[in-house]
Length: 223
Length: 223
DNA sequence: TTCTGTGAACAGATTCACAGCA
DNA sequence: TGCTGTGAATCTGTTCACAGAA
Image 1 (cartoon, rainbow over the protein chains, first blue to last red):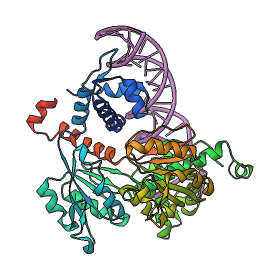
Image 2 (cartoon, helix red, strand yellow):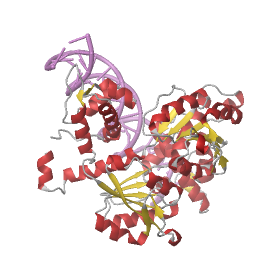
Image 3 (tube, protein in one colour):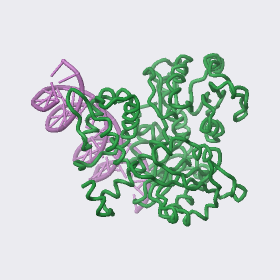
Image 4 (cartoon, rainbow over the protein chains, first blue to last red):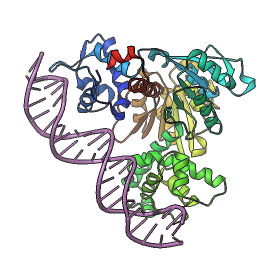
């Protein structure tokens, strides 16, 4: 029974909670208090309890949460109780690394095809799959009922690939290209951009310098 | 002159704004209104104006923002006006792909060393750099005044690598391992987790099914 | 006691609404 | 008329505080 809708901020933390719970299960624990989950994930215990209050599984006071039950519920909420099929488009350096990534399969994500636009790459093997032409996307998607797509092509090609994915009926897209892509509202798109992440870290560094330990010449420029 | 502190949420969008501005500059535009930036980035024009109001550069009404000036200011704020040195630890599939990623250099990030714990990999070349043993980290960091580190090792090794980076004086860390790592407050850590991103997409898919277009058997389970 | 569950207070971010200048 | 700049209103998320069950 889902009581209240789960806020987006909570959803972002659910995978981490789930991982902490699975680690606990591996360690033989049957029960885990919010404080232990919080420490593993790096948030406040209050936050964990608030987040878990949106789920049906209740903890028991003085003891904690039932590990097995919470793993089951978070898995179901995240849709990991059934296999999800994924296609990847773009087999450059990054695409190849993503295809080989071992973190997909354990969560129930099955990579069913790897595609590219470059004719020279068609037929070469990546992660045990023969690379197919992008033009086969619709056919493959229909045949294997593919739901999710990973975009690992250059920025200039990303929108075209996304359009093709949408046309092929995919409903969730993970975009590694450094551009914003448009998609209809019923298609969920998330972007992962390495360059953006580095730039945000770089900001921290700059902000720190601006704030405290800065040379007088720099103060003059900015303050 | 920095008037007000820049909110974190604004910082997350600054790299995207900067990219849109650089695209405009490449297209020969000298000026760009908030609406155009907003469209390129995928946010509301209101949001763009509010964000840019934290900067010193002002737009001109009826016209837009000065492209060149905004690029200069965002670059300075993000610390991209001076070169940032980066080391990468872990040369598995992902590490290799990251080392080869072409998106770093254009933003002023220079990869100065690639390290790994596996003796068999030491000396092999990755992205034009000979792989060095992790134990050289402190020496390299001191010599090249390295500020940023990228962690691309398995989860079990991530905390040790982060500890070594902190000890070596790095102040910003980008962690690709699927675990939360501890670091002192003066060190900025960001995590990028492919599995988490896929799981959040998977949630969207499940939530949609729960909400509307769902088969009755599934309703019974959950509602 | 220990730890959950949650209303209440607070903080932060987004959206609205509109005044005002080119 | 088009577009900026910004207070005000709203919404979302986090933290606090504490009542209450095991």
